[in-house]
Length: 226
Image (cartoon, rainbow, N blue to C red; front, side, top):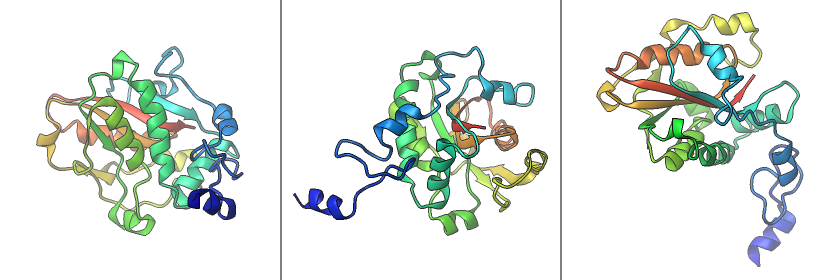
């Protein structure tokens, strides 16, 4: 009764279209969810753009993205809500969605560890959360894996990638990331997770650092690919 009354005056809104959610809807309304451009790379690997982006640059086992990202699209609206409008619940929502699908794919049945692309501690303090954390933890739950965020560390506080040109994104410094506690991932199959992949420079640098651990395999899962 109280919840219904509360929602009457302060309705939860869809983070995509910003319209009030119905009683049985959470985070994203049914209409917007059906309109989201899913990739299905994990079901059909024929034109896997995540793999193509990293081909010849970093050795990976598997790779997927839940959504396609375009400017001025519903997906851009969601990413903006997630990163700049204090909506970390969207991260878990997307992680649960993708996690349910990956749990059906044999290529993702042997993931041991899920590691998020980290934020620099100053940016983490300012935002209050890593926008990939809920995504990674939800994936870990569905894949029966461990979520570990104390191995890969970001060492340089870079500016937002949103307004950078494609060339500037390519020029991400190699020393942006470092690793610690490598014993935690030795001999493991790692699923490295991030929000958006554009040029792949960030993921490439993370993979190169993680490869300092012995006998590991790395797969990729992101929320969206531009």
